[in-house]
Image (cartoon, rainbow, N blue to C red; front, side):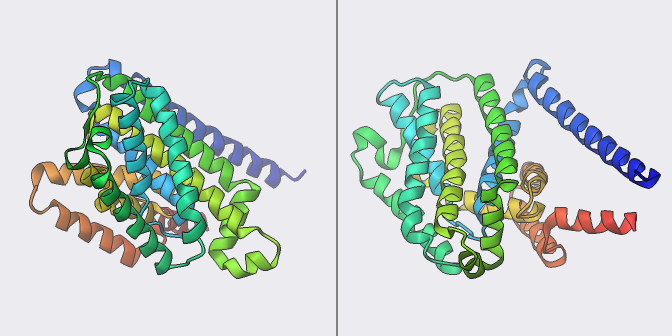
Length: 320
């Protein structure tokens, strides 16, 4: 083996070791944080984790298959309502209710996916958006004694913020790890092939329908569990908040801002936009959405591949 190859391998090992060390350090800080007197701001991190999960789960479909689901919040809302009904009406354990929320959202993804995934582009986006609104209206007309109607559902007063914090943290880690494993699997290659040219992918023998359905189910599962944990944390849900379109647009913006079709992009985009949004909202409550929108617009215009694409370009330029 040449000396240059040995040095190159050594640099790669050192780089991986550094990255691993940084990840473990961040994880250790997040784990011990509730015991450091930072409890009053646990809700900030809780919702940051939730948006990372939402953006990453959207990324599975929108980033890797190119199917932009504007009704992604339907899975979060469905998970929240399944959890709320099971906890408030049937007195089921929060953890069992949250697992049921993920499974229920996967079933919903299958029901939505089979007809909607035959559509492409804007047609798919509009169809999923319409289904989200239809589910919201359905919730309003279902029996109030079960789903609460317009007034929503109040969950049992078992408020355990630290348990909810760790549950959302664990779900965020699971979402990232599973996404990484999927992307580097045969399914992941199929999803990328669909994004690049679906007709060509079908021509070479890829079962595009199966790939899209599996990705849609996986995306829905993580979103549904996140919605369930959120309902447990807030102890109250109502249809307009649970199925609000702004949630979807924020998650899409975070994913695209960081870099759709990458693992780190949704994490980076969610962290920056969520924290910037929280900072602006606290200081400029009437202007923060305008400033927030301008930031996103600038990035989309000048960094169409997101921050990760821009960083990779600059990084490789420096290396050259």
